[in-house]
Image (cartoon, rainbow, N blue to C red; front, side, top):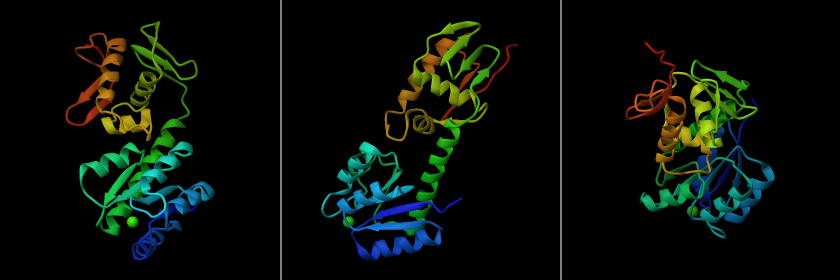
Length: 235
Ligand code: CA
């Protein structure tokens, strides 16, 4: 696999240099930019696999760079923020950043975040390229091409996000997904919605496919973690 390219947008030369050394040691190709407009230009021109974006930048701050970038690109972004308060965190994520690291941070911590974000993106690509077009179980079947949900032989209307959520779970029996994972996989990285969105959709799906929605035998809650699909055959 070709080396992934990381665009590093940071105005502080020593920090930029330090991070470049770490990133190159991890095997990444590194492109640098020292201000907002330069970062945006590089992001558009060189199609990086990931962007590390400082929040406080001359010219155009990281918020604006991230917002402008999101208009045309879903490239993963890790924000470097100066303060640990919740405001920066929320602002960073609301802009569509995938993760954030608060200064001061250790380069090792940032490298771990970079690897984690890239892995998530790969997982997501693999999940959406899953070759299967039809999943069939005792009580229901999903057809991805016709977007049809059949429950015990009858076609049941199923909105796109519910369909995707059910597909994601049913395509990976017994695998436990966290709510956050499901939000990322089904709603996308641009969506930093309420985790309860997942719960609401699970409830609607249970009403459609479970024989008794109050005692789910297919879409199981894993307490304190999230959800899994498991075909528990009736006794
Ligand atoms: Ca800065």
